[in-house]
Structures are given as C-alpha cells and as structure tokens.
Amino acid sequence: MTHLTDTHIHTWYSNDAHCNMEEVCRSAWEGGLSAIAITDHFEFQKGGVPSSDYLLRASARTAELARVKARWAGKLEVLRGVEIGQPHWNPEGSRAYAGSGDYDMVIGSLHDLRPDRSIYTDYDYSRQEVRDEMYRQFFEEAREMVRVADFDTFGHYDYPIRKMEGFTEPSLTPWKAWALPFLKELAESGKALEINNVGQRRWMGRVGGEQWVLEAFRQYGGRYITVGTDAHYARHVGIHVKEAYAAMRAAGFDKVTVYRERKPVQLSI
Image 1 (cartoon, helix red, strand yellow):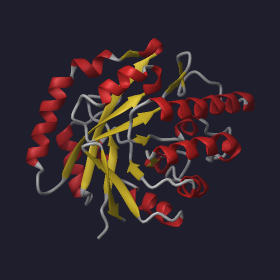
Image 2 (cartoon, helix red, strand yellow):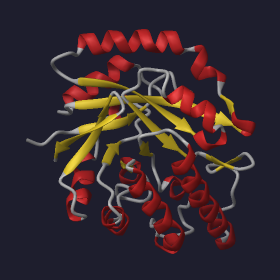
Image 3 (spheres, one colour):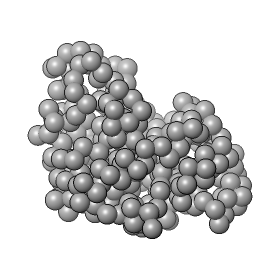
Image 4 (cartoon, helix red, strand yellow):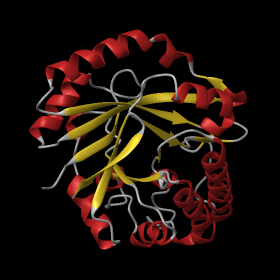
C-alpha cells in the first residue's frame, strides 16, 4: 500500500499563508493523502529572540488543530508540527520549545543567515561570489544546527535556489563540496532529510530531491526521508508527492517517514 503524506504545511497562523486548517484537511482528503502535518512558522530572529506572533496565537492554533483532528479522525491523520527557523541561534530556547508543545514533528529550517540576513531578500544572486559565499555559510550553519538544535527533519535544503532563477542551474552541484559534509552529519545524527516539493511548481521544474543528494544521504547511513509541499495555500497540499516518491525510489529509498510524538514511523511508498 502506498501512503501519500505531506508533512510541511502552513495555515493562516503563519504570516505568509492563506488557508485555514479545515481547508487544508479537505484538500488533503480530496487528494488521497493518508497523513499530513501542520507546521506553522516559529522563527528565531537576530540575537536568538523568538518571534512573538506565533506565541501570541498559540491557544487559538491549538484549539483549531484539536477541532480538525476530531473532525477528520478515521479519514485523515492530522499531525501537530512546527517549523522552527534558525533554531541554532538560540539552542537552549529552541530545545525547550521543541520539547514543550506535544509536537508530533519538528522541522528545522534556515530562512536567514547570520548576522540577520534573509536568504530571500538580502543577497544579490546575480554575482557568482555571492552565491558561493551564501551557500558556504548556509551549510556551515546547517551543520551547526544539526549539532546543537532539537528537530526531526531538515527542511528544504535547496531553499536558496528558489531565488536564483536566471543565475544558475536548479542544482546544488556547484556547492557539492559544502553539501556533502552537511549530509554526512545529518545522516549520522539520525535526523531526517526533507524532500520539498516547491521546486516542481517554481522555475526549477522538479522536486527538491536531486539524486546525488539523496544517494549521498543514504550512503552516509541516512534512513529517514520526509516529504512536504511547503503549502501556503490549500490547493497546494499534497501536490507532486508522487514525483518526490519517484526521486526517493531512484535513490534507493522505499519508505517515507512521518513523526508521531517525535518518533519516526516509516510508511511504504
């Protein structure tokens, strides 16, 4: 049996998303998914200060999640997740937060780099030296994150390429020398690597699961792969999961991972 999963989804509790949890669940069910994780943004900002908006809406978010879990019980597994940005900027705070919310899964992501530069807006990617320096620092901070932060899966390792249209090929190959040590540390940590599906609906034209990346992760001992659409609209929930599964199979993986109560559960693809 093939289990279709999407464990990277945002709702209106993320400032950049445009759907509620009921809309997300209906879209997932209509798309034939068996399990989803709702993973709204929680960001650590400059100086390791946590974003206040996520915390201010905590009770409303928890109540809405409880309602949809009850409403969709027996039809769709709805997991409680969170995407923590820059958890290594405040290791103690991020570990305390990841362990305090009855989460099923925690995504660790890099949206910003030190000292406080947005990967999306603060780099001139038309310049080769800028692309090189950004990705050198990206993987340096990613390795630090693996060592000091508490999370289950590393989100969208190819995130910066989203903003490089016209300046490079949609591939991490130019930065392979920096990517491989990160993949090795991630695999040895027992954490998961996420295939993020955004690239299939952006200029890159494919899911973010380059075969050499997935093969290297597996060869280093990596066992767990999660798949997420990074949906910010209900219509994107669950799309291109099958393409992600095809990339996994080509790299030698036959199971996708979901997390229940922070424990990995592998499902057939």
